[in-house]
Length: 174
Ligand SMILES: [Zn+2]
Image (tube, rainbow, N blue to C red; front, side, top):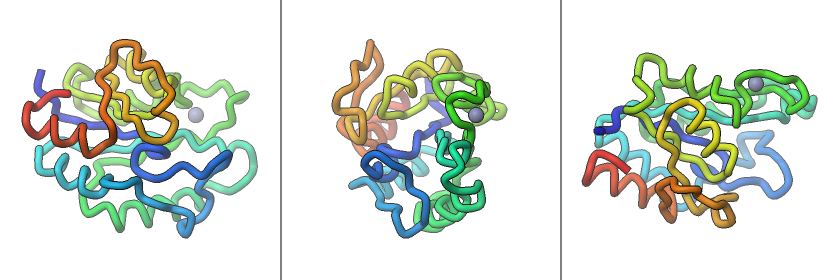
């Protein structure tokens, strides 16, 4: 089925993960190689683009949500494309929220009006794949960030976001 909406994990997909930590300030943001080009390719496909990211650094009391929004202001400014939404789970793991991946809540919110079978979620972790499946969205694994060591369990796998974007632009599906 032709994909109309690409939901993107952030850390390890769009930006380089900070080892053992979080991107707490805009200056710490480093794009993954090819990610901005990938966004341009995806935008050229005419798909809706959203971001869905766990940021438990807020719930853990390391920063406030405004700091994460400042990081995202840089991301949005440099992305070169329009995101229909940037969704953040700010909760700590022990808060029991319904948005922290692998819970499906944030992806269901990100979908907006898109039916799940016309959407993919691109992530780099087993929890991303699980969240996608629980939301009814097609999971896609990229081998950046944590993705190098993850068992795809049948999900489509790409070396990075750009490789995925090129396939989507050629075929309309992953
Ligand atoms: Zn949450």
